[in-house]
Image 1 (spheres, rainbow, N blue to C red):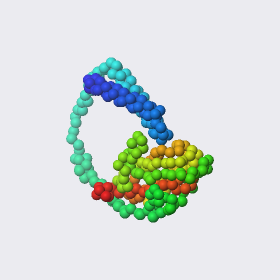
Image 2 (image 1 turned 60 degrees about the vertical axis):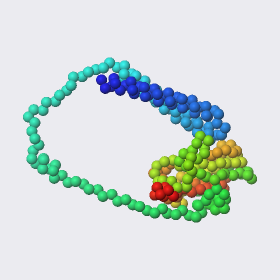
Image 3 (image 1 turned 30 degrees about the horizontal axis):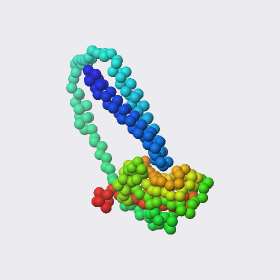
Image 4 (image 1 turned 90 degrees about the vertical axis):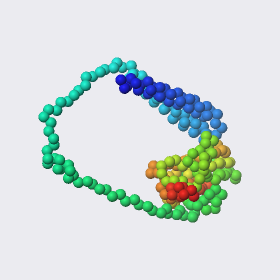
Length: 266
């Protein structure tokens, strides 16, 4: 009886979600066809794949619910277990349970101050060309097929936890809480050429924690973005991002992760 009452609601919810995902898939497909920049088309393509996969899963679930609802209802007689001659627990068992030791676990919380990052990593936009660390070898694995142009430039990096469809940061900041989330780094680029080698390096308190390296294939100019979401979550301290082109540091910036500072409104 309960299943017969719930199934229509479940089916209606699945149909609504399926319709919503199909509409989102159509919207993403339209955005993918109409986006003028490669980054936008790639993001729209990813959304299309996600919405399409969710739509297929919801369709399978809907079919399963419909098939389950069409099955004939089978009623089984209730089974009642009769326990004759039941007795209260013996006195020794009761005493054992009452005297059972309780384990006490003491948890120590370690709090450490953030280690200041090297001054060479305190870069932002235009200062990147004057000061900068070396590009790690593991992120310098390609040979560029295009040279730097005289006016090749990457804009200042803006950090945020959300971006618009046109890759503009929402509520950019320099201080963020510790924890699990994705940090977006948006920037603009000009006079780039397909075939240039570019790399991005994330550091935590000066230590390399992530990065990437590939040949540029995103056109001459437009908005760009890089994102980072460490599996262990953002720890307290400073996270810096460097963006390199053909072995030259083009732009870099630093964000501080400190929950107390965010709560204090700093």
